[in-house]
Length: 208
Image 1 (cartoon, rainbow, N blue to C red):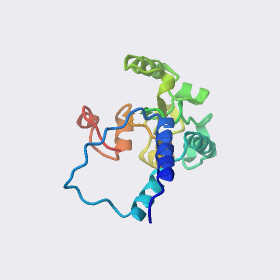
Image 2 (image 1 turned 30 degrees about the horizontal axis):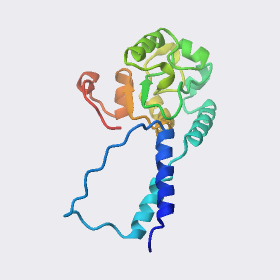
Image 3 (image 1 turned 45 degrees about the vertical axis):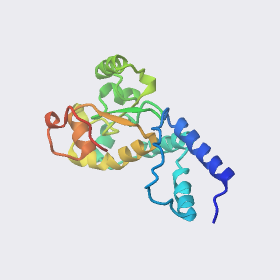
């Protein structure tokens, strides 16, 4: 069956708008058609691909989903020790659509008190790093491997990171950053699910 050109145009414009809302400001240019290239796919297959491509959650829907996820995490009791000793959960600072996401280890005492990540001494250092990189804090997204403060600011246990992993994965899927910056070895090894040392991971890009 033939593709309606007006409908296709509407779908393409809708997809471009959703990309713009998510923070995408450029797309690679397509090369010239290759005369030896394979024939186009059947129209039904193109329609199926287009329908899948134009259905990303809108920025507003993603923001709502993040709010609901934060509320769900507030009642989490997967780690009894953390749930018993925390003042509150610490979800994130930032909005979906940010190109860069910083992921730390876990909240500290200041973060546990204020409910925001990286607001203590480490947060002041991070703010200077963000500024030196040409960004403002409100232009990036900041979160942690754990959403609760470990007692005494100890390193998160593997079981605690595993308990929190589904929350982190859903969070990153909704934010959709182009780049994730792991702040330290604990964040890097948990994000990449690897036992390699930070020294072996540093200095190159990894796929998440």
